[in-house]
Picture (cartoon, one colour):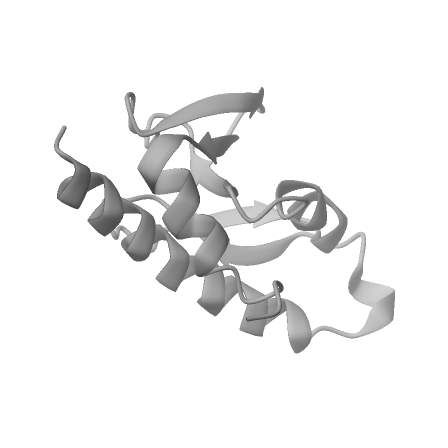
Length: 110
């Protein structure tokens, strides 16, 4: 996969991460253990729901390079699976994709 494609993949996934950040901001504190429908942050732009608690989502957001995607939606060569669950996986962007994901992380100061 060429470098421009890797950058595009990271940008696509970052857009879904921004949507999930907005979902999380709208939650009440007592909802932290309830299952919430976040969006798959995959490069395929599927937008399918991934049901996890806000606490589980926060674990996926520990780094600007990590994303939560449905099982089977990971992209070899651009990301590596760092955690597997029955319905979803947490992936970490590598190389150029990781650099772009870090830059686009809404939690990181400019």
